[in-house]
Each structure stands twice: as C-alpha cells, then as structure tokens.
Image 1 (tube, rainbow, N blue to C red):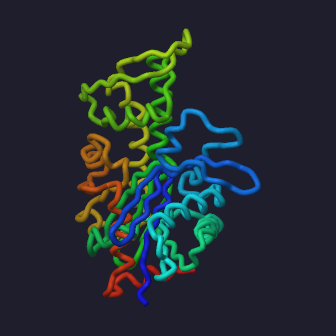
Image 2: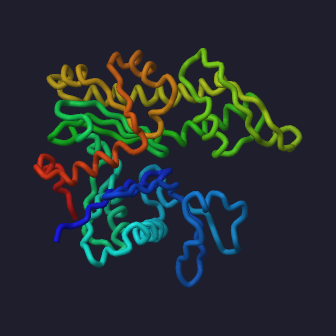
Image 3: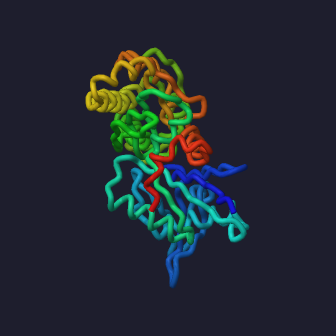
Length: 328
C-alpha cells in the first residue's frame, strides 16, 4: 500500500502542515493546563485571542528560532492537528517529512525528531528547509533566502543538495522588537508585539520616501493612559533597514564560501526570496542594490517552501532521492 506523505514546517511563528488536498497554517502557540497530564485548552488563533487564562494554564510557544524548546507541548499540539487532518490514518500508512533549519545541531535535530515521534508516527524524515525550493527553481546553482518569523535561512543550493548554508536569528520577530523600541523612543508609547506586527505588515517599507501612516493603540509611558497615535512609515525605516542590512551582509558572507567556479552561475540565476519577510516593501530593490544580484520574490512566499518540499518528496523520477537519504 502506497504511503501518504505529509510535510510539516514547525516554524517559529506558524506551524504549517501540507498533504494531498489540504494545507493547514496556524500560529505555533497553545494554551496548556498542567495537572496529572498535559491538557490542550486552546490552540493557534484561539489561544492568542484569550484575554485571560484559566487557573493553572499558560500560553506556550513550543518552537523558538527553529528549535523545539517544549517537545512535550509541540508533540501534543502537532498530534491534535494531525488527528484532525488525518482521521483515518490507521487505514493507510503515513510518512512525515519535517522541515528544519540547516543550522540545527545534531542534538536539536534529535529533539525535533523525538518530539514528532511522540505523536505516534514513526516514519519520519528531516529535510533542510532550503531544499524545498529545488523543485521551484530548477537546475543550476541558486542563492536562496527564507525570511521567517524566528529565523532567516540563507543558502546556495543545486540538484545535488546544499553547497553552503547558514541559519541566523535575525528575522521577523527581531524586526517587531526593533519597532517596539523605536515607537517607545519616538512617541513614548509602549505597544505590544502583535501591534508591532500590524505596523510592520501595514506600513513597513524600505523606501525612504514612503508616506504611509497608521494609527496604533498603546500605553503612554508618561501618564500610563491608553491612547491612539498616528505612526509614520518613516519612523519604522531605521529598525527595518537595520535588520535587512544585517541579512544582506550575511547573504554576502555565505556567497564568499562558495567555490569560485560556481559564482558565475549564481550571478546569472540571482537570489530567490521566500518566507513572510519577503513581503517587505522595497526589499527586492534594496537587495539588488546591495548585492548587485538580480532578486526574485516568490508569488506565494509563505507557502512556496512547504509546497516545493511536497513536490520533492513525491518525485516519481527519484531525481532528489540522494538528498533525501537522511531518514531516521
């Protein structure tokens, strides 16, 4: 019997599960209750919307910067979603493919695998996230950058696998933290991480002539009152550009580790961007100027990696068989 193949991207901000006929993408967070056993009270958006938590409950983010920090919670969360999506798996064997940052240590990879095994599924393969772009990009050496919430993945890949790669914790959450600091400094206004996220998505830009504005709600640092303040896009330029400049420098650094003979191919093919952070206004122009490379952004930056990985693991021609040889 042919096995059903499911790809899981644990993420740091969002958990995504992709299979034949479905895709589930939810915030990687839950509310748990501690007692004689671990109990899930709420998950995803439902957990985030809870204004107050019941007694003995806590809000938990089980994955931080690509690393499973609460394996027991992550296993419980993942199991609940898999049971929802695959109610009849006992009739059909399942293979799970889990996307991971290339920079995870052996111990961190082991923890990820053990956490997934606690769901009851044993046929598990770990795949570096950047490889999910291989079916999308085609042949040749390609520089890629996955801009996530907790981590940024930078790599050079081809059909043989990964030539060079690194994982850094300068990502979407870093930008949010910098925006919070900037708003506090400029307006004496304390805002939440969720409000910083709304600012980033709403008026965040790398264009210095962007005149967008947005009204946000926060706490005045001087009198403690809640008030609304109109924030200009130019206020966010410094923290946003600081983060993307660091990322650009790291991309440049990774390219210096690639054999010289490969650089011509990389220069011709350019840099491919994916992940939520690829949506930042002006990013393509910014990186093109900095790196002197053509830059292309996925039309589906949030899901292109997991969809590509699904294509990769279902390859009937065994084109990618060699790079999927890390099954545990």
